[in-house]
Length: 128
Image (cartoon, rainbow, N blue to C red; front, top):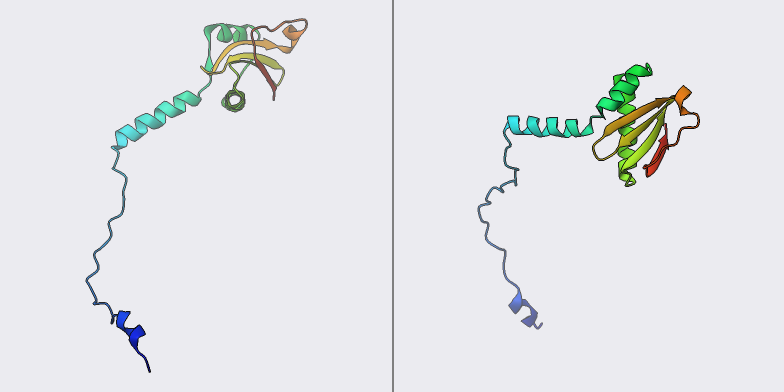
């Protein structure tokens, strides 16, 4: 029998000592830096009331609680995702004109004052 085909076959490979693998860990970030970044991001999500809006809310006896501000904030996120810059957001019986990039309520108009009111310089509207 011709065994020429065996000439290219090697025997078993020698056993070598395995080296432990090193994991690619992220560099540790100081806790203060993380908390500062988290606080910064949370501030970016806050809804801000302009002085004019504060006056209108007080004058028209419109009260906003934390839940209301969160819902308006979520609406601002949706408008921002669509590219809106100045938006009219209808929430409950109130219309809010909002500067989307700054997340600022510019003014608020209650149901009684809405009739025959013209809103200008807005590029989007959302009804909640």
